[in-house]
View 1 (cartoon, rainbow, N blue to C red):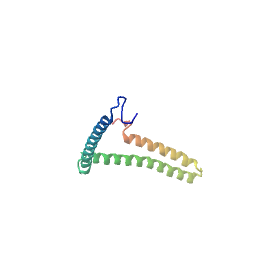
View 2: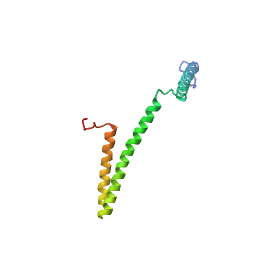
View 3: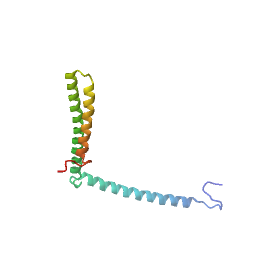
View 4: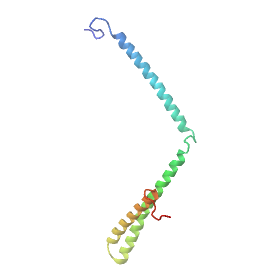
Length: 125
């Protein structure tokens, strides 16, 4: 049989071309709607002050992140310095450094958890 004919001998090219035309029209319509949506999103993000305080919230979250990370790093550094100083004074080789780095890390994690508000303050005041 020929490629464009069905069993009765009639060509089905008319239905396939109409299906292709309908599909092409739907794809064109979808492309147009997507470009409109993308354009409206771009104009909203390009305008200053249209975020509705989102920039301030992001800055606040970044400040909190820097504060929490600096508390953790400070705990480890202070522990390492105390351990090194204790090792230097008492000639206890690496044991003071190891113990105080672990204590500094633990203190840093406790400070981060406390500052993040995950654990309520136990002072009760």
